[in-house]
Amino acid sequence: MSEIDWEKVRHLLGTKSDKDIAAEIGSAPATVARHRARLGIPSYGSKKRIDWEKWISLMGVLPDPELADKIGCSLIALRKKRRELGIEPGFFINWSDWDSRLGKETDADLAAEIGCLVAAVRNRRVSKGISPWVRTEKAFRAEGSRRRVDWSKWDYLLGTDTDYKISKMIGCKPPAVALRRKKLGIAKYVAKD
Image (cartoon, rainbow, N blue to C red; front, side, top):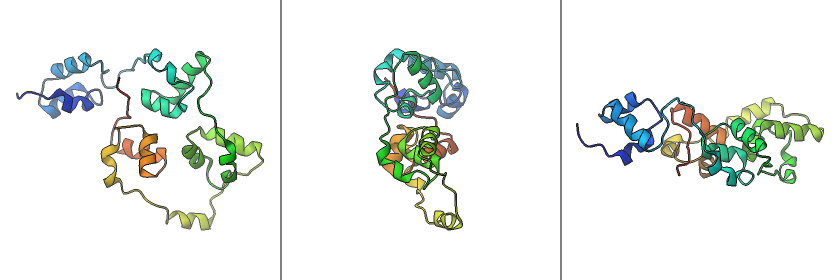
């Protein structure tokens, strides 16, 4: 067996089983497990224990979706912890920038662009008495002319940063990046210390 350059394969650790990684890099599963544990990377499929103390300073500063992406946890887990700590959300929506688009596109599309929950957009639209967007035949035909992402130019970035940040580089919406990343079986980006 040849010497393994663990820095070159570090990105694989915890993204699939130690056995699968070992087969891929030509090592023993126990060796992979030992190196993964030494680096503090949880095994694939294990529940990650989050050291919330490291993230408290960013709660209420970064938008919840972006911070959850950085931590590598669900949005629900982050919001639950933030509320337990009595920290207000860090993302204030200046609706004057977005009100003109309510009802002119789906709530989901607008929420993805704003970076908030669909419920926030829906609640705002309803409070303004604006009907939801309905796909018309004309809109359906126009969708065919929407800009499509040439993923071959961007796939190498998936999993290297948050879906939100990568979407801004590409010029698409974060859910499009997440969908492509999941389709390719690429793990969500987790910030390293």
